[in-house]
Length: 127
Image (cartoon, rainbow, N blue to C red):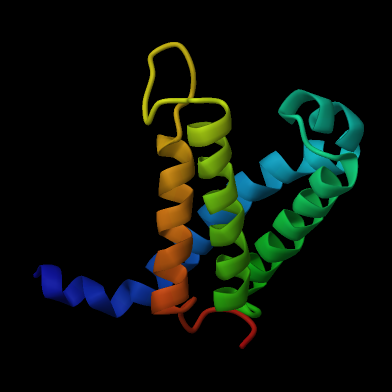
């Protein structure tokens, strides 16, 4: 019975693409709208924060419509490696914590991006 579910793998990949895109769009909007404030908060140059926000938005749109899915996922994976690095090395955030978000959230976004790089985006969307 479980083997029959593989016929829906394209729908599963679409759901992963949409879920990942929604999360990245949610986090990209403040970077684009308030680059200066975000830059001060994270300790990065304003231009870099704006660029990250724009890359997150563009890559997310690619995931949603199914255009350049693997490239979009690669961009997001690289961004997440940077985020994990910042949390681990600069801010000394643990993998998980009760009082704050650890880098476990970043790790699942990274892993989801890698899965899309390796599996592709499926057949649903603009090819």
